[in-house]
Image 1 (cartoon, rainbow, N blue to C red):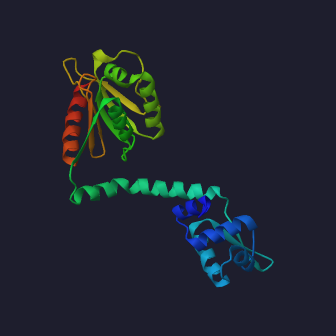
Image 2: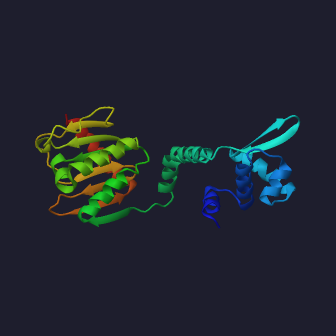
Image 3: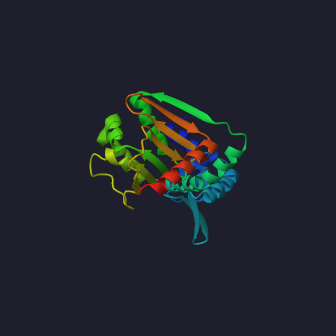
Length: 244
């Protein structure tokens, strides 16, 4: 199986759909008998498959001088179809997640050590299906663990993914005048009360709570639990109101 045929199969095309679609691409526009000859598929089957390809949006039909002709849509149409499918799936993910949680969901805990563990957590926050992060963190600690360059790249990826951040930062640890709040940065910032001490970095999203220690203890956790997330989110909301 060629790489093209294999990829089109992964896209969802059947064997005959792939043969006829490729024949259409080569022919440009053609009558059914020409398509059947090129694809080496029975003419009666070609009619049925062409209707399927039209419904998928990768082929079209028109008449010229009373003759029915078919042609393939531009290959870029495959990308557009995939993007449309992806968008549709993303829209129903929150509902599917709620069904998944109700249906006998068991909490999960992932434990990591070292710098790669920190990176695993940050990568996971970029999967937030509800496009919202709630965080408590120290800028100084973020610099110490992964450095400013890594964090700048992470922030750029977060914004690109359309994920908004509500963050409570530790005032005495604001070591540089960067990472402001605003719509461009997709970030709202408040500083915790002066007497507030929270050594861990915490992110809340979907049904997860991620925790990262300082370099001293050098560990990370991703806790997937709806009830634990609700509890931490409620505490976050109280602290958010007390912060400025």
